[in-house]
Image 1 (cartoon, helix red, strand yellow):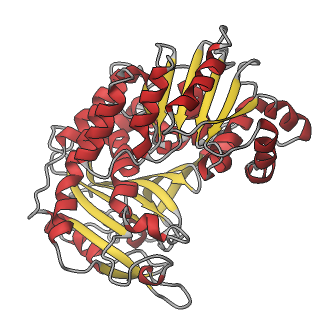
Image 2 (tube, one colour; image 1 turned 180 degrees about the horizontal axis):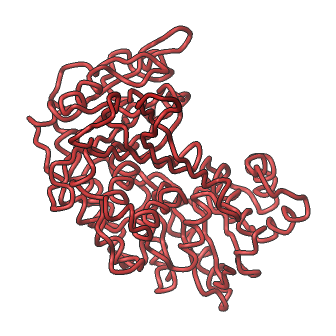
Length: 481
């Protein structure tokens, strides 16, 4: 579908890693696909003193290398003609006058997108300065990169500060996981197929597993990661979005607020944790050295006695009619055995097994989000021969191969949605704050807890305590099934 919205995209933090590695390459792909208005303009903004020519030289060196497909010199030359650069210090009100003048000089602009790829501590001042030059009019949308706070109170403060200058419908809180085609496809699998939706409940489903595992460690990000940890980095945002898409009720429509209303209901239906119940329902882990692989405590800029978690597993419960009694296991970790993001629905076993070697937890639906985009339904089928033995066999849909057409990266889809004013794949304030409310008892428990995280060997599947968490319910992690 061709996009006709004429836009100005003001990209704060334009010289930073996210802009160079993700945002500009994704905008290039949209340009090549003909999805950007011919007059659409990209205004790179940062405090670095340079002109447009110098900025484009930096883009040539630091961004072009991340364009992995559809590259041609002709298209690249056409794309960078959209780009201009302005030096703007986000803490300097006088710098915003030139920015305001630049944007307002194009009266034909329909949509102004201000992307704050900066530290959250600058959001309030940036929004105040934007408003001071009139860059908070109804056609202006502001994109806020995560992390949006470090706890509930700081998140509320950021929302209050930004809300002084922008209305809720102008605020786009971005979580790139929501831009993944594979995660959006969960709604289609559920609500466009009677065989799945009719069984998507506690009558048929025994347990649900949501996993985001990374093989990489913290690499050069030790200083940042040690004050963040896996809970803030992955659980409160990415895993919570996977939970919502998996567990939500059918929305009235796919309009933004209808979808987001149902997501909020899921988070608010979660059985609240208490500081005491965290000990029984949450596992905190930290990777240890294995072979030539460093442990977390040996990484650069990580304190030798750090308790920061690189792994989290949570047993969650949703207290509503559809999911009562079904445990949801959420986990994420660094230096895991494999890189994978997946949703696994384990179905109940049949009460009466007439086949002698029928296996427990044999029937499951596996929705893989990365590194591949696939759906596997595991069923038991008879093995050839005169016996009556069965074996578990997957029925696989490889969505990467079977669905024709270009599959845009998450940031491309989300950037196009902001330009066109579609809020469906962005977090609403009440949704974000409900997620923070849920994880706060975990943070409070860990702040008081003097027990070190459970160690797990680098490139393993996490600590033994996480397996024990599931074993209490007769469950196993997917890789152990």
